[in-house]
Image (tube, rainbow, N blue to C red; front, side, top):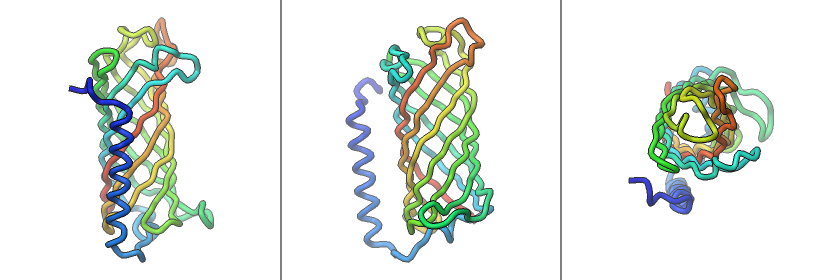
Length: 209
């Protein structure tokens, strides 16, 4: 099913979604400000889907031939009042992020797990809300021990990267992002080269109260 999915298709899709957001933005009130919606105690319910493409960062050459589709539900809560000033002003959010993934290169495999993610929301850009997030978690995958990088099915996950949310309505935002994504077993197995990749993601979030 996923054999025909190419990186170019993902980029085209992300560009198309961005263009739709810009067109919607011209018809929706320009006076909306994310800082009035995303405040301390706000809950975020979201869902991301993404394309994961391995690379040979840190000289782990085999990882370049690894591709997957990721599904990432999110539940978050804003922990702080607004901090900082100017373009750096924002707040801190903590999210729980389960994951399910289907690897289709170099062969079919599955992955399941979850992470705790810390996100800094930049609140000085109207209905656009740039952010930077990072997280750590655990993952089970039957890629191991069938690939040379990993000898165990139980692994750990580290990830970080930028993104942006766009408020289509007062309570709903569409999100685009990219993360550097690292999978390894922290040395508990015979092999631990690790898998490094980029996770391009798009999704939707609802904010309450």
